[in-house]
Amino acid sequence: MFVYPSIFVLLMWYDTIIGIDIALAKEFLEKGETVGIPTETVYGLAANALSEDAVLKIFSVKNRPHFDPLIVHLATVNEIEKYVEQIPAAAQKLIEAFMPGPLTLLLKKKNNIPDLVTSGLDRVAIRVPQHVLTSALLQQLDFPLAAPSANPFGYISPTSAYHVYDQLHGRIPYILDGGPTEVGVESTIVGFEDEETVIYRLGGLAQEDIERIVGNTRLQINSGSNPHSPGMLNSHYAPRKKLVILEADSNEVTPAGNAGFIGFDKADERFKSEHQILLSEKGSVKEAAKNLFAAMRQLDASEVAMIYAVQFPENGLGKAINDRLKRAAAE
Ligand code: TXA
Ligand code: MG
Image 1 (cartoon, rainbow, N blue to C red):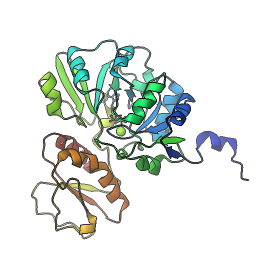
Image 2: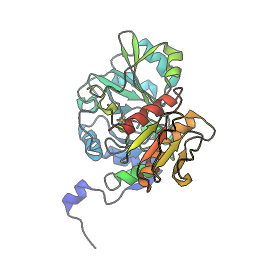
Image 3: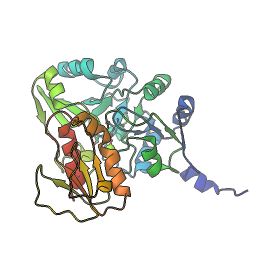
Image 4: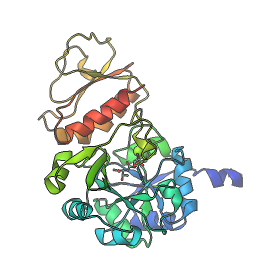
């Protein structure tokens, strides 16, 4: 029998197990390892948020720069006050309306959150995910989970356990398989500056829904040099292949014969049928969001040389879809 040299064993997992064993996931996390976890938005790469050593593993598995802070995931909203100094009134309303759910709040952190998690910033990103397996796991742990999306830095977020396996196998011991994710785009990130509610990342909770609860919001996204949210860099969520956004109803482009197409509800005869993916034949932006990242991955792995995508209507999750397409198209 071949025996691995010990240094190899330290750095690599021989293989990664995919399963639904919460007790096993818990065991790895308690040992300070990283585990792939399902949420309603995308899969996360989780580790003990209160252990610097465990959090360091997240950065190294993902190849993520330490200046890009991590979201802390809690079992229930009741735990929020353990980790944050204060909850502004608008935050409280959003917590009551949308948590658990696809919403992340930036709140002033307490000292029990390691600086490594927030990259030295004084706010921590807090989220209560809504997924049966991950909620059960979080309930059984006596620490919260720091988790970025479970993809290599800059690539498309995973929306199934197989996406995680595809890119991180051999680097993590376990992936908890909660099936394909319901929402399909990352959480909406919201913070509070003076009296304003600010949206830093469009995501699975629509701006309109937030505004129904707290009134006007200010969008502060897409500032490529914004040091507070490096993960919102212009080029992010990107396939390896070039992606080009087709303006609505634009017929000027003559796509090459082997280009792929991501459409909303209508096919486009300029593309071969086998190279087309429609995100929602019934025209639902919600369903389209759920299918977006898998479609990008599928075309990235296919024979097409490049990918065209249509622009989505700027309402509901359509805004988040357009944001992700723009970043995927950025050079
Ligand atoms: O839906 C989601 O939010 C998923 C699931 C796994 O929860 N997580 C996720 O994490 O998308 P990540 O790390 O891929 O994206 C989190 C974003 C990053 O752009 C990061 O810069 C920003 O949140 N962020 C995290 N903590 C922050 C903080 N303290 N201040 C400002 N931005 C922060
Ligand atoms: Mg990410």
